[in-house]
Length: 551
Image 1 (cartoon, rainbow, N blue to C red):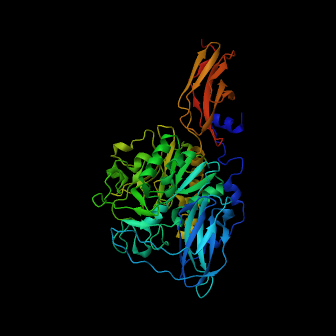
Image 2: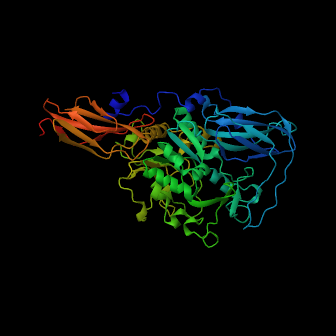
Image 3: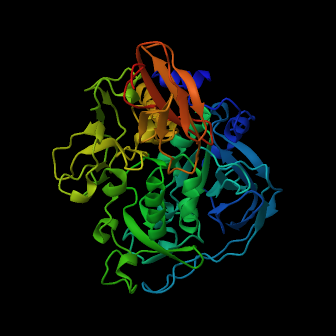
């Protein structure tokens, strides 16, 4: 019996980090540098033809500048605090100025830059899944050093073992707010567009990954979790990819989902996949894709949307009978105009909640500045969003039509656990980036960091067995543990404990468990645990007490 198994049966948590190095810990042990975080500006713009690639696939880079420039590619992570590592740097070359196309009709095709490919970045099998920043850096003239940036997500190779944790990156939301060329899904500087393209640089109002995503990336990689990343576009094309991981997390402002994405998350939860929604306003609008996933379609008004299938209309999921709170426990509570500013969370979980262990946090304590200007909360009137046993962990009481913000946890019928932060800036409490980049006054909160470690320790475990039945079988005791519905569970362990003594492993494997009857008098307890493909054990599930005198 391993030390981790003994610790679990005895009710203490084993360390979250794997014993063997994973690709993230190996990658972050490499030397990093800070060149990725330099200021932008200047006469240079850049975009890529891909939102994500698998290692070995090329990245087509499009640049507009009158100056000479070079391309630098950085992988973003921890790297001892440097935050990035230079992966590729091309020789300097002369650029050319590219035009901004005229705006198309409102109901016509989206505005695309349609610039020629200037550089091709070749990836290979050594590229570890993650956020990759592509910087086009001016190398001549008075703007030398200025840079235009874009981002490409490198997915986990389908030929590699699946990571324990998957982070979904909200590239749809980046582009929904992107006002480059005067078109976004919002009436910022003109009429709202119904279609926006990925084939353009990032401009005004773009939802930057530096707002509420990079803090999560830095925290996960600093702590050494076994994590990989994929764009929400990838979830649409392969919704079953969620089933390969123990925990799926959403990062930042993940507002725009397709029907296939929502179906994929619902299926993953039903199959025992744990979920963590680390921002707010998640899975709010339903979108469609066109042009081989290079265009987002969003009408918002079903009367304007020409789609005949009512379930495929580009409207709120809650208007389709699928409110966010069915999946997340909470839903977006913003009603009137945004209420800007930083808002505090108050600890609402009971003192004994295991996710508060070692945090130093107590009911009523406040965590500053992590709620933000958009938040999610409970819907007290929706009968579709009742989750028995739901626990409110943190709360921001607004006492207005906006509604309160709540961070919650609940267990689905599959046994999977769901965490929803309800706060757009929750990750600002995990890392220094919020303070440095956005002027966040609170900075990282040690209690919230430990809370997140505790949360991840739980959510990287499989659900415990639903049933443990103990009965006599001839001269043996038969312990029946139902076969798991979760295909990632590869083993089950059965322990016997006598009158409070240390538990003893008596069975392993997914076959039946017959234990010779004990002759020593007293009361025995039998516990069962599931073990998944990553070697993580569930919490124990106990059968009824068993006496050696049972006949």
